Length: 380
Image (tube, rainbow, N blue to C red; front, side, top):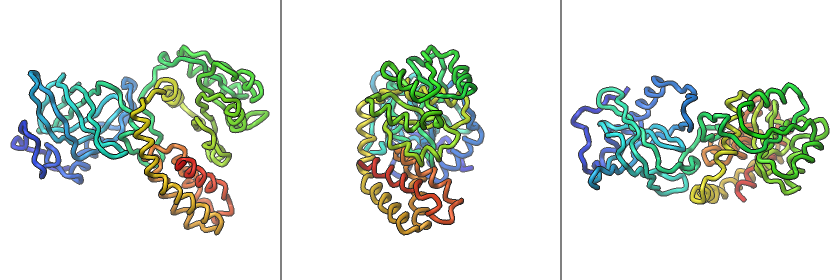
């Protein structure tokens, strides 16, 4: 545990000197230790009352301009703790009045800084001179502009989705009566129109128009879920399709991410997991042009590296070089999600999880071929 700041470290109305990274006077290592302590103390439990999910945002130094009554301003460098679609949590060595307007300078993943307007919603005393400031943004932000996720975590914006907030028409394609009953039970309080189809052929007859989202089982009696999804796209139906499968690896090997607008929800799943996936696609469809442009810039800058990864994987498969394939898959597993490349991240996760069981690439080359293809699609 790093030493807490003393009263002498309380910031003045001037911008902090270049030597001080934040009002706590902590460098990256000391700040990490403090944040680890806070996380351990608070726990990482799900909060059913919280609308937006909080993601780690451990920035050592963030410029925040506080706007006081009368128009005077104070600019401070604060340390970051976490961020959500609706706000940010920062650490400071003093008290700030709730209701104070502010501008937070957030570093964009595409490069540069963006001023985000907000207001101090809470200022919680933690210990000593340490205070945690919760700032509520005036306008919700696109998390993909600012957050780098660890490993293969999907960047879901919502902590909790009340079923009553969902609306629209959902087509559930499933031949198992028990699974059909489970989805119906999970969505019993949601004001959605839930259509059921026990086969791909019957679902295609119902999917011609007016469907907002499809939940599709991977194993259908007359076709695979992927074959159904491909047919849906060929007919020009563009609504999101969520594949439900107890075998995500099989979905990946079948080319899940070759189809635009796909999602994957592994079985078994809880009601909360289903509602969050639905909420992400039915409630948060408009991220705004600015956010889309920022994410596009990140992907464009990464295109040469992604094509290089694809070439490495193709060469490894051709040469049956398990070591080279392992190296590429491991690197992609750790970085693709951070770039917001969900398709590449999922493909890399499947390949990464498969590696320990392989003695030769010839045992299962398809997974690595699909990972290379996912890299090329993202680069394009």
